[in-house]
Length: 242
Image (tube, rainbow, N blue to C red; front, top):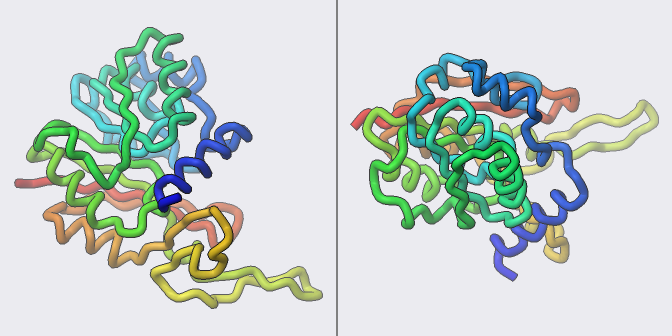
């Protein structure tokens, strides 16, 4: 099975086991979005409202963003939404919410590294929830995002910081501690070739430098530190200026 076949199976299995991040938007959240109070979560923070203030009427691609959460919220806020995802189980959630809430969402199954089905300049916004840790190289994704965005379009990306992959937990008599032992970039299969779980830790050079190389101008950055000290995530906003 290739890398992306493994990723799809892993995500489908997690959805079937009701992993917390696959929870759909609630009726209350959807109604607030209809009333102009769109809120999209970034772990225990939110995407800054300023970044999405003019979303109504805009063409938005939820890239690797299925699961019945972001796409329905954006559609309720008045956006023209397309969602692309590798996981059929995640896409089923969007179909179910769209049917229940009478939302017009274009739902596509596909790999985020290949957006060839979309013409250049197709979207005003691309929203990419945390998913780039499932691709070996982020640069092809950024190149495709730049191509399919309109001039002046916005790319919003969430990702885990490299610190998530640098450290392993060491147990000791005092309750244990984290030790930096892994070099970046990181690939889970380098440590357990028999394990079907596939995950990549990318460098900040990959994430930030990769966007800049494509021509993006990064004009927004947010971090979110979770309870586990190595769980640091970040959010960027980038604009295609020409």
